[in-house]
Image 1 (cartoon, rainbow, N blue to C red):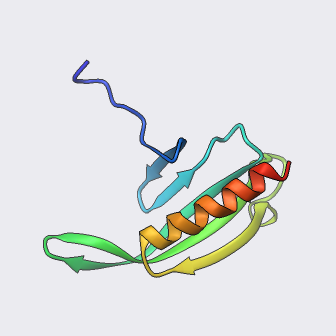
Image 2 (tube, rainbow, N blue to C red; image 1 turned 60 degrees about the vertical axis):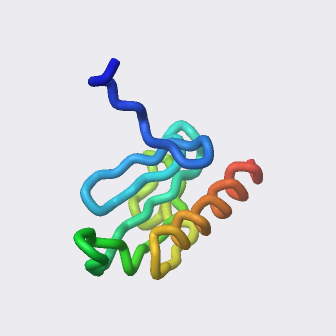
Length: 96
């Protein structure tokens, strides 16, 4: 059991990371959020995100990449980015 990795989630939805891109939401839903860390700054011995791109995207595989983007914004911290991402995703999924 100690070797099993528990999937990371935030407010009940999966959160996955690949390099500097985080995906928030279920790929089986109609929408998902993409968070891309554009800049970092050193704080102590860690690098902290200082510029994050947020995109609300459709998960339809038949659409091209740029056609999937519904909303986009840039935030100055990961906290504010995930905060707006949660609101956008909740609204998009409740409007089905």
